[in-house]
Length: 120
Image (cartoon, rainbow, N blue to C red):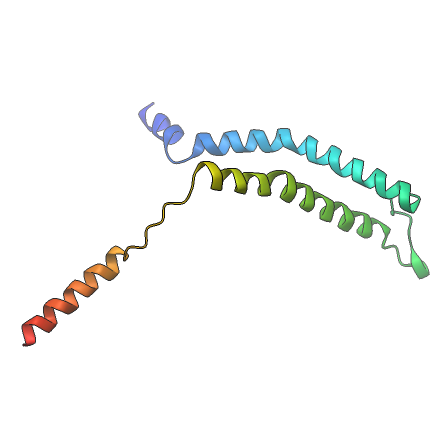
């Protein structure tokens, strides 16, 4: 049981599980938003489904519908998730400005100074 407990509590397993569950729940919101936007496109262009579109006998309609849906999904995810998350993270958890020298560079500088002092 100890190994199983360590497996469950190791790393970010719980955070990953929560993220997965939240992503599944949010998928329906994204799908509904895409359907809404496709319906609006349908009002303007006549049909929200381009599956039957085949200029010169080349069936590109399904591909065109998939590309438009992908672009809409990407826009929805960016503007409804990524952008607000980034702004909230910057507001509530500002990045700590540490202009200091990294530890490995500081050690190398110290070694260089000791070697230079030794040669004098």
